[in-house]
Image 1 (cartoon, helix red, strand yellow):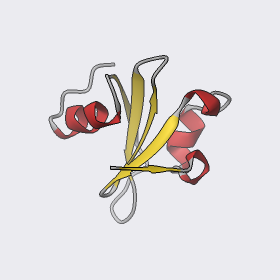
Image 2: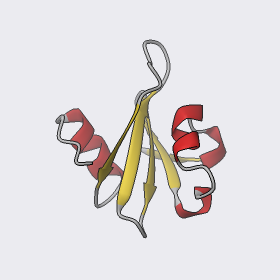
Image 3: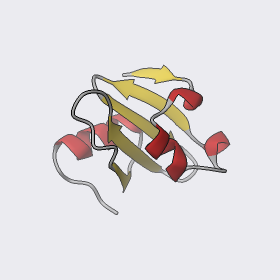
Length: 78
């Protein structure tokens, strides 16, 4: 997982955090982009690239790796 510039995040995920960008950090792992807020302990994820529907999902989590793990395990908590 690598940290990326928040302004390079998928438009749908960026729209979810509009106005709160300063509270989030952005990451990329394989074909996924993740935004995570330490203060809120909340993160969102979206599949990017070929086959992406642009649908974002959100969960309470301890970090960006936790967001990815929950998503891959189909264990997202609203």
